[in-house]
Length: 267
Image 1 (cartoon, rainbow, N blue to C red):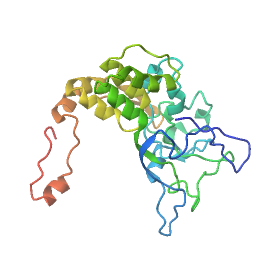
Image 2 (image 1 turned 135 degrees about the vertical axis):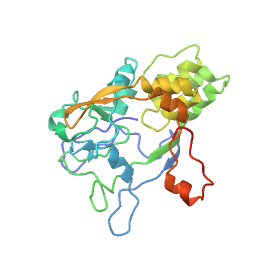
Image 3 (image 1 turned 45 degrees about the vertical axis):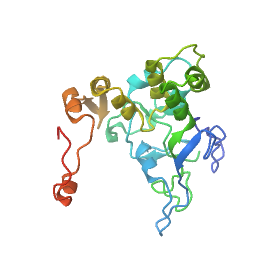
Image 4 (image 1 turned 180 degrees about the horizontal axis):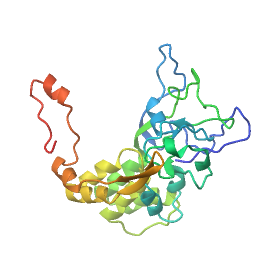
């Protein structure tokens, strides 16, 4: 996914570097439009605003609530020359954006945030939205559920005789050299970079076994800034293993089911 490119005009955002909706990579997507308003028209991607930079419009990136900051460990793990790093991550320091932030108002700030799913704003700093022109409800980016790269890498993982060819279609598009053989580990690593922030990695890890998943998650422990002070993020390996990676079933739902639903182990 390519990033947006800002232009000088105050009322135009050049999206020529963006693949756009319904492009050939998309297999299945949840569709959204920019015509949302507060009078019954509700077709905007409001979830997208959760990912926006907190309290900061910096064209082409629009503001939001600052969730899902990116771990610097992950950013630095991309192979050299991998185009997906700059297509997936906003480098707030490298792009000169950090000085526009109120760091004390940030939660789990790392200097990096998600580019793939972020609101946009015009070069004059106003929201790039339709409808009510409200950045909270009028974001129109579709949510991709399945794309062709996923199909190719799934086929490779399942042992297709074309596994190397399928792998290279994804790998070379990212600007990386072709390979002559491919292992399960190679495919899993490729999926990590290809589908970053698309809601796939966690489930890919669980498929490798709960022990491996728990250790991989725990290895992402980091120190971030919350309210301008250090905030240490750690993960309990034993808890992940005990719960097998499942979330807690809300107790309200267990009560409503008259006990038919049973709480997941570990909770």
